[in-house]
Amino acid sequence: MLHVHHVNLQPIAGGGEVYTRALTRALADAGAQVSLYANPAVRLWDDLAAPGIQVLRVRNERELLDRLPREPSLVLTQSPISPHCIERMAERHRVAGFAHMPMIQRSVDSLRGYHLVITVSRYCVDLLRATGLPQVYPEPFYGMADIDRVGAAVIRRSPYMVDRRKFRDVLIGGLDTVARVAHRDVEKFERRPGLTLGLVSLIAPIKQFPALFSILAPILARQREVTLEIFGAGGYAQVRDLRRALAPLGNRARFWGYQTGVGKVYPQLDYLMTGLPEKEALGLNVLEAQSCGTPVLAPDAPPFTETVLDGASGYLYRDPRTDAGRHFENLLAELVGGRARPDPRISAREHLAKFSYPALVERARALIAALSQLE
Image: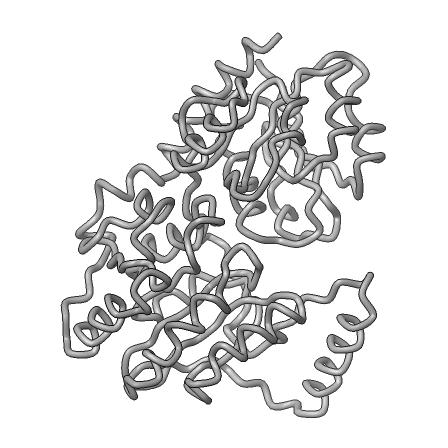
């Protein structure tokens, strides 16, 4: 039995951590023994331990190197790992790693120390191959929707993620907490009349939300029946820039902060919206939404052309940077006017099967075979 030492040291929970959680289970169900080395700050791992799965808490690369076995083993990384740490591990172990970001304005130098590099979409596979990196796993390792996380009620929370290294973040986070304590009434989410669009995502630079909505917000504002609900958190600058871009919507754009119970969020949206495409690797939120029956509105470009089946699991629109949003505006008018809203669970069943847990287990089985052959 192959023993996989699976590593994710990220201190916050995002799509990569949801992916890691699902893959850990899939590797175990495909026949591997899995030890997950994970940051203690992330609570997503708390209930993951099971037969075939051990969770070890490590805070940084130094602790990781201390905790890995002394005998040669197989290490599979998810979070970014420094080249120095990869080199140290590779002196003793076979080391494979996931590249969770497309190679757009990025260097592959940090990946050269791996014996095998795996990535999460055909788009990312092609970009990696274009760099000339030889040790690329040939198939996209698609993730799946992991919406079994029940979580708490959907209530208004802070939209800010506090980086303790930045005084501004600490100050703003503290002031935001004080303001919420002073106003003790808890605001529960209730959808408003009309067409409800939503973002369910970390508010991160790779999403490019400010650039997207600097074009789309005036278009949304002209349709009085449309509201936008934002479920996610980000750094001060990201939230500030997104608020500025959404200014034309006024109070029709609301921030709800990070929510643990995403399964309660998606069914209350008419459509999920994505960010801009080229810096996105796959988009687990796109898969989550569709698995809940919520269709997706996304730019017509990779990787969204891999995850959204146009007309069946949502609608693709021309990148608004190319036409000032005219195609999106026409689509939005049709949606407001009553264009049919597809249920992906019905109209895209075969498409979504590629992103199911059984499909992930089969991919894990093939990966185990490839990892077993590494030298």
